[in-house]
Length: 274
Ligand code: PGA
Image 1: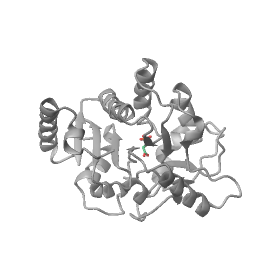
Image 2 (image 1 turned 90 degrees about the vertical axis):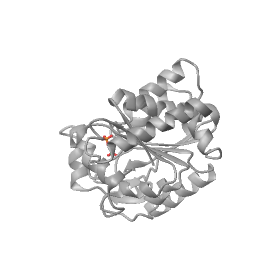
Image 3 (image 1 turned 180 degrees about the horizontal axis):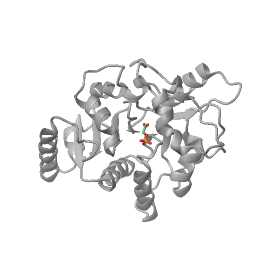
């Protein structure tokens, strides 16, 4: 596991965008796993800046989002399709048909939708880099506490705490969904590389549990401890409850020395990672 602690939210967004940018430059037809929520918005803005300075094209990039609400349609401003179009896709040269979300429309069978989503990921060659946020209850995607750690894309009922955390995003006359399709934990663990972004003190307890706690479905993000190439990019507030903070800073410093000596750390250490 790589744990990177940075001074603020802007630095977290910058490093996340930089990692995506490096991948897209190296593999222009990479498969990205993307996340919604408030955390990645600043990173998406940085990616748009890279794109606008014409240093990178997303023309051959394929994306799979982690999750989508059930019961609202793509044209609803609360849908994750709408969010992704607004925050990223409409501002870059990505092809809409290459962008995927696990959408389960009215009358469709969620089991079939989940199985088809898994198959599309396999058919695309697997996810090269999965971006994640983390819920204050330790969820990743909408894999809520108590979920199977070997789960695949399926329907999940949101916990009361998730509904509460997201309640401020819904207006008084808007219906807040309590069901979602989400990639499973096993789907996430299949990605070749994963980056979890977390900012703010409201994430500190979940981050501590995810990185330093015992692996348990009670905190689904602990499953990432079994991922071979996972990076946690945290601001100071989100990292504030970690016990081994000084070690993570030291290890990150060492990794940067490796980059200076040998070039790109990830190429040096993991030549076949993409
Ligand atoms: P947030 O959500 O980025 O809005 O905090 C993260 C998550 O619930 O995964």
